[in-house]
Length: 581
Image (cartoon, rainbow, N blue to C red; front, top):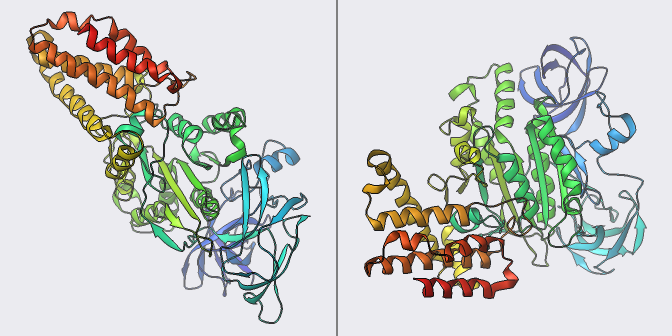
């Protein structure tokens, strides 16, 4: 039933007369038919957040209900696409309308005219249940999309064939429980799913394998697992976007979903221009052939920021259900929280801390808790993972502000970025004294079996040395470095080696930009071997100055640029340490 606008307050529109419309249903607002979502119902008044600018919209204009919630289209064509927060295809709109999006414009999210080659993996007569794979489509050279039986449909496969088909053409028919009891259900390659509803797994599994990022400070000291959650807070200029892009390129995931939520236009433009140029390190193909970008810049309507986060994670869940390892980068959830605060203020809700709505924590939790390692729906026993890494932009770098604190309550990894380190050109600028990971036991067990038994001991010793260095720095400021004992001065020197030769990485160097786990262990092993043997030399009465000036230290510093294929170089350096000490 058509409604009428009674009030407009920025992105919030109040209407009456939408009698059968439910909360979170989509509507078209005004003569321009702008996209909006019902977020509150008070008696006869329906509050609508509009995903486009409301200039020119006024009382008396009509509101058209759609009868369904905000949903995304899922099917072949997602990989390599660039969407806005409500899954409008920005690349298609730009090609047809130019650089600016006209309000009210509508294009299908996925191309309807393109034909895809459907290769069946099931056969006629098979009994299928929700989540079973019917066939595959080569979506890009790096990704094969598995066409699955939609939720709520099961029965006998009465028709399926290999064919070139568009998204809306019938590829299979299932006779049994489903949409219709009287005729076979027709299956196409296109599905729709409401973004606020998590896609159900068959079973949640405990995370086990690390999500290898190739960044030494993250993988060794503060690791995240496949299916885990991580938070990257940091002040302006500390490198949040850089680390997100580095993770998107190097993380050990099959599919990357990158969500730019309320980011500055120039940063998002850099992502959109650089991602198509980046090469996937495993295959040498363009990185976009396994990436989906959701772009929502800070000058776009605030209401679409929340939608962009949920749009991204729903697409990620779709690929997770196929059995892929998916990593979602959300940059940044602070902008989403600011949008929530603005809408909440216009709804005249009781404000919480710093003006944010009281439900800030639960809304953030609904997003992060959609991550995980799962047993996929269906009878085929696939496993998939969805890892979520969200950056937070606390004003002035204040980590005690509500968004950071609410995020830390639900994530298990905290990578604290430090603008002081960034100004020293130390990348990644992760502060090793304030960061933490609750996945350490799982990763220690994995690395102890697969990499080396001494992984855990090396990590603990590294933490101890860095912690001791921080304590000694306080003494040095008071009394000077000469007042320290030789043993403490050696710790200061080894801590500097760990910082400069291990924790610091050059993102532009072809070898140093990515370090596999085995090489990370070898690098740390060499540095700690030097420390152990230097301690023994001090006990024998060798002067600290002679130890510090050993030629082998220069070779240790160069090891980070040695590829793992030259493993013998690491052993040669260890032998030289023994000889020279």
